[in-house]
Image (spheres, rainbow, N blue to C red):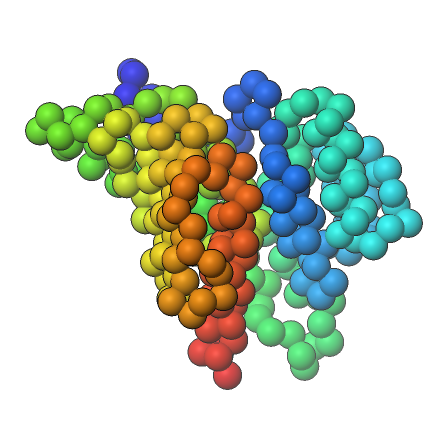
Length: 255
């Protein structure tokens, strides 16, 4: 990779990625983000939404709506007006800060609190998912170096690398997905693979906006798909299913 600067990726740099020009979330992605952050039980409160929208400079266009619709409408107007997703990414980062998990803990009566604030903080995206994603990216870069040295692949393309991270990071954080196996592709692209809970999901970022998806489900809830999915229309449903099954398994393990 040019100059090797992408190898020094840190947690802070992951959380402060600026999108490439004209890069926007799809309608499905905006809906998934709004659904997760506006979840009735575990999502943001109405007052938190009001505060975070103001903090991030996003207009609260429908404050009387349900939380999910309120967030979705605000995100849509913001993105349509600015033609980028910078402020929406900022909203996600603010919403995922560990301090908010401590406030979430305080909503429960003392005898019903599921975990301590420290445990919630440790489980927060900043302390777990982002760190795991950072490690997976570094491992992919190291593997790419080896493949290039052995003349087995082209170097990872910088623009494709950044695009892949900008697509994957918000999805992993907001949907609380397991961090995928990340591998370099022979053409200089990046691959992300989930092999969890009976599902096989493979995303091949061959270049910006050129994503090839392989979607298979041993349980049959998701129809098989093999083809280009540049806006993740097919992939989002499969990722939601992975997230749902992961939460279900955690609940069973905890009981």
